[in-house]
Length: 151
Image (cartoon, rainbow, N blue to C red; front, side, top):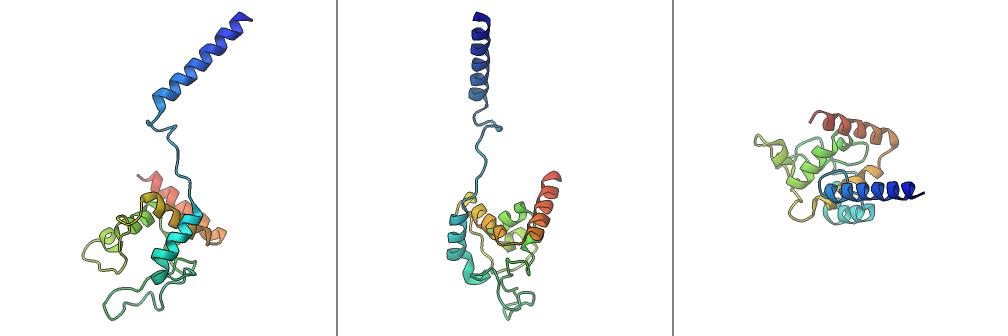
């Protein structure tokens, strides 16, 4: 009986030591948990004016307007948002399309990294993904997995 009690104490100490040594080093750091209500709210405030309240984008989004820039694309299944990885979507949202594309590309899409935190912008992207059918969500998840595996 004494042996069982001592082994239980040893296991508890080992677990406690692991927790204390691991905090902030990776495995026990809390992972991101999306706040979809916050994402929807931020989308309505910051994105819907260009990308549409129903994710429909601007008319003729594939044809440059008079300023030579492409109109805002839809974020629903008729657009191409679901063709991109989470990393690319977050980068565009944080820094703006022109900064991500580079090479003199001009775009009306600003970066929102100064106005919103990374987690807030992830919430927007996660909310957008909830609006897609399963097929597009699965495709986008595969694109994200391939992108993460290649890094």
